[in-house]
Image (cartoon, rainbow, N blue to C red; front, side, top):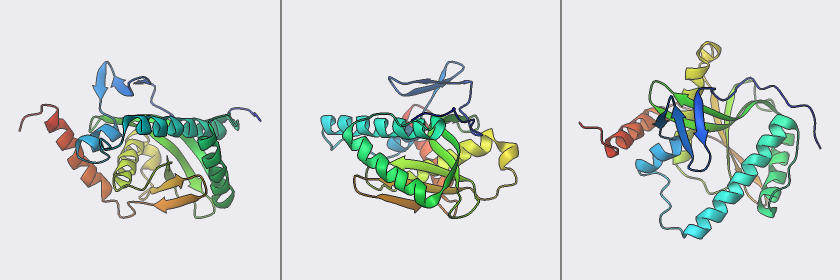
Length: 215
């Protein structure tokens, strides 16, 4: 099914270039580390113990699920994907039916001029069944991890920098992770006290030091 493409309030920065093959972000020819790279170099999200082929299959299934959700949010279009992504998408639709999200942005590529990193925000919305707060929403098809809260804290900084005027009167932006498995969805609120970004800034410093910044 297909309808008219939706106009989103939150959009990717036009001056941020993204190279899909090697997952690289650049501004004016300068490469910026991604949020996930910063966290990995600080010791979070290291999956070296997992077999390479298992990681590749999981990554491909995750990419297909994200593409399926993005097309649905932006275009009201449901694209065909692998069976694993299809089953998890059914639980995404169940989540949507329960929480009534008002979609304001999807797959938003943004960077921080203040702190020198970039990332892709899965979605910005309002969960109308809960309240009218602005929400940064991340979709995960794997297991829970402590770094996920730091990831969303980093995304909040990106939103506040880019949309300073819009967010100036918003003291709190809620952050949620939607975990999607084959048989259910689980919506989890993270970093409700706003402490995550202080930790993420420490991760930025560690990443910079590992990449040659002298003390």
